Length: 88
Image (cartoon, rainbow, N blue to C red; front, side):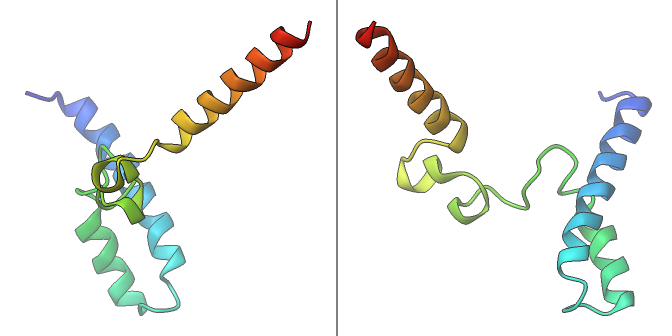
């Protein structure tokens, strides 16, 4: 079971992430709608930074079997280091 302190921290992170999302959608939603949106999505955004894990939201591997951004950067860095080492 999760401790009260960890739950408070997770809720704080979720609210912050929901507010950031709501700011982006602020022109579309009204003021009351924004508050409802933050309250509704705080729980979804406790542990993850995205609303869902679909490819458009941040998980390309799940549907398209592609590398994530971090993996692509690491692979490019590794290739770059190999080329530098081979040129020496």
